[in-house]
Length: 221
Ligand SMILES: C[S@@+](CC[C@H](N)C(=O)[O-])C[C@H]1O[C@@H](n2cnc3c(N)ncnc32)[C@H](O)[C@@H]1O
Image 1 (cartoon, helix red, strand yellow):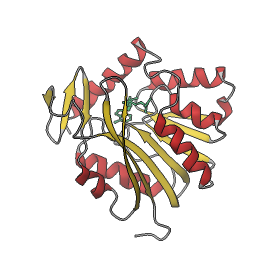
Image 2 (cartoon, protein in one colour):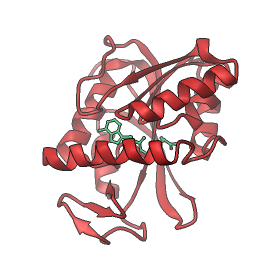
Image 3 (tube, rainbow, N blue to C red):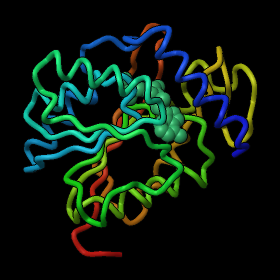
């Protein structure tokens, strides 16, 4: 992936959250509601959220009693999350780290109870970078723990619209998105237990997404 696209996207997201600090509002997303129930039922106590933005979903996990470690490459978004967590009285259950998901996750092997990533893997990441992120998630998850992620897919109205950056990445209105094929979903689940691929929509476009639930096997590969 061209590093200038990455730098442009990081700058873009920083300015998006500066100009619109509550861009996604404070209601949790449907996938976060689902994930909180799933993680709770499977005995998880902590959640690692990747691409948490200004934190609508991280706050939901904290309010539901989880300890949340929220990461994003936008410090502006995470600052807003900090302020809101303090306002909501859940700051002690929320940690944040500015982190580019292309870099190794700053956590030990098999140390995380559950990973949640809503619309992060479909950002301006090449297929190879996405594979590396999923391998890192597998490394940090405890055996038997679950990754729940969502992505916009090739059935989305913006697939093929705007500027093509190759590798199914299209930039529209300043936002670069890697639209997922079903083949890519299946490829990323190789060696995992793929439990569910659920279609849903979000927003007014609407964005067309899949919510994927996959569990790390209890025995190593
Ligand atoms: C579509 S937004 C979703 C935000 C949040 N998950 C939500 O639904 O409210 C995607 C988020 O991913 C972040 N992001 C994009 N590329 C990233 C990268 N390479 N590393 C870390 N975060 C990234 C952006 O800053 C943005 O907050």
